[in-house]
Length: 473
Image (cartoon, rainbow, N blue to C red; front, side):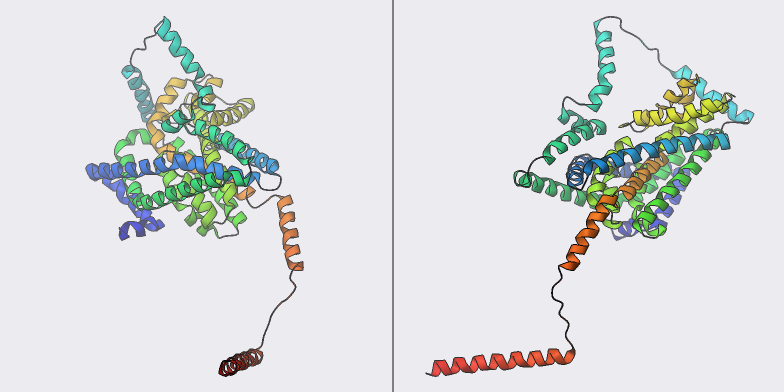
């Protein structure tokens, strides 16, 4: 147990677990599979606690933000920054693809490997049957209404049980805004209940965090044992561009957080170590929520109310990593099919990638990669064939996508929770009033303290003597 605790708190130890896990996936696959199974159990526990914690954290965060000065300005600033970061990542991904040109000048072996993947997928595809009567019409209607029901659920308990983060967040925001209008006297009991739930979930997650080294070991083993080297070589240009762009934009976000928190870059990175690792290995946007709240509020000292509101909201809607991924994937496919891109098409890729990122809110895994088709279809590129290629490497890309989105959420918190100009003025006035309210200030020398102590001893002796005299009479 002590070994796991030491490794979970050591960056070098976690990197060692990743390296050993990668070797284990190549030379000892069964041991790696067992570690991966234990890591998935850890993620199940974290996800189990993350969904109710998302509800409670959003509730507390919304209530605290609405109690701050000019809450509408603050919420508008949060939304504006979230949209801006997603758009900037989409533009950055497009420009990175145009500059580095992944997918261009591939070797004949790489073309053959990618073509083989597409043909294999086409041959393995099952025949799709369509029912033309009542059952098919009912299915079609249910599919068309799914998006609306997912955003505005008619049964909050169902989406809570199914873990649909988009519907959960919508229901929680509506309930939180209504609850915030009530007086403190009417809500004290429910606040105490939510506080107890919050602390209990934090204890569960703190105990589960001991398995983070096992998670890193198992995920590295799983990646090395389930990814073909030929596919990695053929898609190497795209993966290199995507990882470099993720590191670049992630580093900018970390530098911004460090500047706003007035802490060294290394300490900020160490404080965000747990949420970054969980986001990198879990494949879930909601699993890092508890770790991020703890790191940004307790470790880095940002406003707890803003953190508790922005982290759940950003984990669902702020898909900066997905925007970067969609833009780069589209440029890669265009180069693969030797499709020249003009200035108008480049601008279209950036805008469509941002729209696709917002459209993928609440999705994870392969479902997120499928939204690349929104951008590809605008350029009339083959969506099905490209989808097959990106599905094969999505296990590698999913973690960096989550990490960049997580760092973007933290950057929004750093920019907002330091306070708006009106709040800084209000705080300065409050400090000035406090300074004016200081009336007395006591300062004694050592001789004065000795004299005061002597007077107290004499006074106490006189009181005792007077008591004896009164008793004797």
